[in-house]
Length: 236
Image (tube, rainbow, N blue to C red):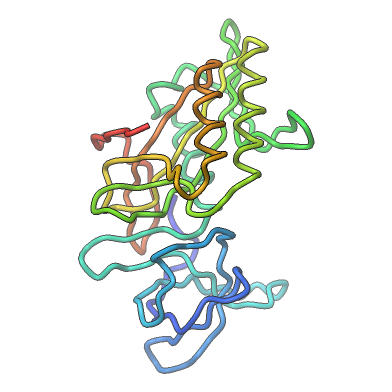
């Protein structure tokens, strides 16, 4: 997924009220950017860090910048926009680039299911069971090379696991897909110490037939893409 508008570098002043971030552009101007991430962003919102913003001239938007990346200034990036994984994954699903899901030709996003929920993607193909795919953006890293989810307690995520387990019980394929939006990680684990209930729900869902997939990404100020070829180690 290529960013619609070229990103501009900035320095973070502070993130506050979850969805707002004050930043300093290279020309010295201070601006407020939209932060499309409801999580804790542990380790990713330190004052002074280099970030990348996407400008816009949409008259309907109050904020003229959106925070997209953290630049670790060592050649690695983290994508902090939680809407990006679905966009990147949709492109990969349509192109049938994911081997585990390549047999499905029809890709439907945001389909209602469960109890007042929407599945990120419903995949269908004549002769195959429907595939319900839930996507989570992974940005937490507390150990070198290891990405973890979640970065805060997520009752909503636990609910999604239970609903996926119900789809599996009905004979459908149910897939929990974690997209690691960090280029410095090739291992993944659940952060059970942060949210024990989520880890327990994941174990139960997996026992009931929910599949698990983890994919890395290629990230730059140009865009975010699935890196299906990168070797991954799953510590689940």
